[in-house]
Amino acid sequence: MGFTQVTSTNDVVIENFSKVRAGSGLLVVADEQTLGRGRLDRRWSTPAGSGIAMSLGLSVSDFSTEISTVPLIVGLATRRALIKFHVPAELKWPNDIVISDSGTKKLGGILIQLVQDKLVIGIGLNVDLGIAELPVPQATSLLIQGFEIDRIELIVAILIELKLLIEDGSKWQQEYANACSTIGKEIKVTNFDGSQISGVAIGIDPTGALEIKNLENLYQITVGDIEYLEVSQD
Ligand code: BTN
Image 1 (tube, protein in one colour):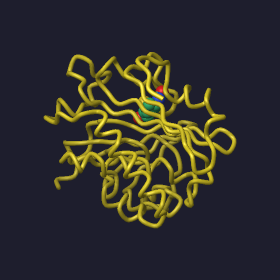
Image 2 (cartoon, rainbow, N blue to C red):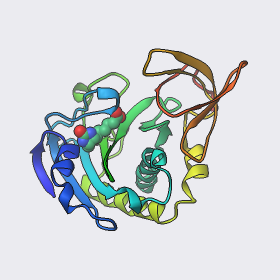
Image 3 (cartoon, protein in one colour):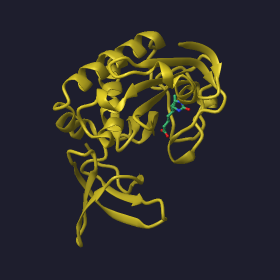
């Protein structure tokens, strides 16, 4: 389904959940979102004609991996698609598509909602936004980074790569770790309750959790806000 303007493409998928069956998903794409949502209850800005706002409704049973891996698999599919257009995108755990300055500029993000046995997979990408349209200074767009890419071609590429990754559930973990700018960095994680853990991100486990090591412990983080404490020289 294609729309000129919606509140949030995720909402439109939920309103049309009856169309989603195992093996048969629903795709909603909009030119503009008026109430786009990001992770952790943040707003997501999609001004008219400037970005990709797309949501896929799929059944949980379409995935052979754990639900917790879905944001990572979707991020990987998006990165693969961007690489096809020569964009050197990286992934910031768990759901950010980043680029440049050692992976600190945000190009896009993934918002997954689980409703009963169905998943809403929301993907937002800043494509043609100019500097004045960026919602926050750490955001960027493909255009600002020097890439002029047709939005429809990019959406098709993302869907192709996602299908391939879902069909072969064994491929994502190593590839995600290689593409993830978080690994190897000194980071600080802020949990929902405000508590914080600092350490070095050393890997991704099979459930998609981020492994962090510090002098006291080895942690598996499943949710949280990540801040890079140092920028690597690579
Ligand atoms: C994040 O980085 O916090 C996630 C951003 C997800 C934005 C997309 S745009 C399409 C879909 N509809 C929404 O309202 N949100 C997601």
